[in-house]
Length: 362
Image (cartoon, rainbow, N blue to C red; front, side, top):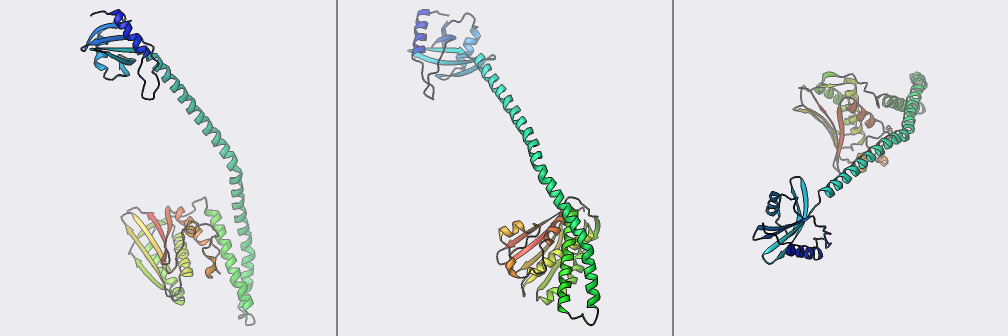
């Protein structure tokens, strides 16, 4: 190896003074650890290199391919810049392994601090949320308990009122008394409301359904027959497309209640001369019941609230005199308690359709 100390030191001094800027326009701030001088691809000199093995110098010569940058060799990281002087190329290098280690350590420490902070914030938020939500939960439970108790207490006087009205209406003197008939109708409506409230209070959080396998096809056909007179009276066409012998696992009494709620809702809201179409089918392991009524539709806001308790869409339609807005809420709870899902679709000025979906075991 040829040693040219004076020339190498001159080049190193020059490269320190005139170090090229990096892409951001900042000076690299180079403190040289050692330098290597090449001519025609051969190492001809080194600076401060007694401890640098010849093999490392050769490896560095093979790895360097840019005017400046970083390389990693034998577990060490070097930052370098170059200076071309005629046929000679000088590479000034700095060992930044320790700097990289310190930077990595700082990043690791800050990452750990960040994760611990996130964990602590999450724990505090969890306890604070529970603390803030508890009064709401307590209020909800008290409200639910009050509704259940009030509904239960109202049943006895309503039963007495209905019994006495029935006795009076059975007599010749009061049989055609319209005032008693008004009282009877409102008493029946109040009785249904208390029963619905009591049902919702009992089923909101507890699955009290008694599931069994039964023929949904025959049950649904029977329910359609029971409302045939109502649709005939309103001049509504009742159509059905019932697949035969569809067996589902559901609480039978709750299934009947759900279907009747959907049929009752469709009859109330379907205009005269329009249609109600009931479809029941099973495809693969998917059961579906559809109750579709034409001639009326719901907007997006009404669809989002249709299963809310006491919600009644478009009260101006004048068909809600016997409604209190709990039927569809009950239907939704029944579906949920039987591992089914009730949804609604509507097309403007065309139709509204309720769909009961569930998976069945083949």
